[in-house]
Image 1 (spheres, rainbow, N blue to C red):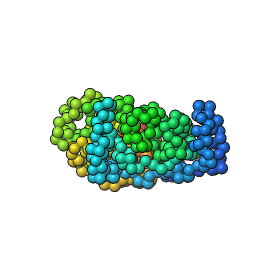
Image 2 (spheres, rainbow, N blue to C red):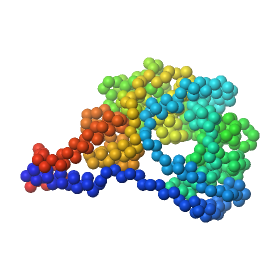
Image 3 (cartoon, rainbow, N blue to C red):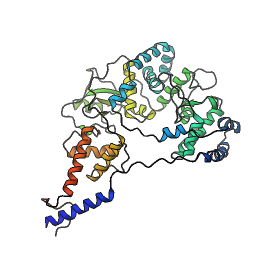
Length: 431
């Protein structure tokens, strides 16, 4: 009787896998017909003017305009491989980046001291943002912002968002802050020394030098006052750090290392967490979390309320840690003390395959998309716990190999007609 139950189960598994098939490859991007762009611009002109944009501003921005193919290409390009934290960090927090930041701190000391005093944001943090965004103003971007945003709004995948940003960009031109032809930046619309999106510019940018206009490209007072104003409004807590490297106790529960698990600092101290550099703990008002950007074998960081503020600027944990660490370096603190963690990173195709395998093994990741979102991380932690592995939710090559092996073992089991089970599967009917 058990053999009959098992046979039904295995046939169901095989049928489900056959129906599901291998992980789907991403669909080919369909590039819109450029001949339709003038018609879209004409319709947008009516909408823009209805929202108060001056006709002459529209004409200056779009006379003879064509969609920017390079913008579409960059928007649709997905990275082939994920970057490990060590790779990301080492490419951005370099000795030359630190040395240049120290030079900027000295060169603009009076301005930075004044901005820090007014907003409560440390000058080292402001310079760290400046360094990571544009290498201290050396790389502002060469894409025309109105044309780039019009291309992205017309392309259609995130049309509403980019159309809104385009309207804000034209309002900035309307206000006399910059000419449309001079409004240059990244392909996605970020601009100036601190790479503000147009909506961020309109909400937070300030005239720091008092000349009656806001110039985030050429006026460092405008750029620094605007950045500090944004961070203060986002909730920056004066006198508190964003992140601190820590050492974890040998019996640490890796499932607790996630950015959403916040507990008072005293609880982490009681659990045996200590500062990596042996220094004193900071004074913080809110709860803290532990993050492991390269898994349990890599560095560990305790993150605080100000880390969330940095994440509002850029939602990447690696970016936020790089800002925090560059700021610490500029303040004269020690370098990373932990080893980098397991080498190698999965490709986006491997992440998609991993998601497919986890789904078939009963660990729900949702629709495989090649992205390590919270649902995939949660599923990965459950798999790791079931395999008696450190449940850090990190997709290391070794964990990928374990998932692949488990999937292959499940396939072999489903094809073995003589296999037996000690008990019927959950949900089955006893004969």
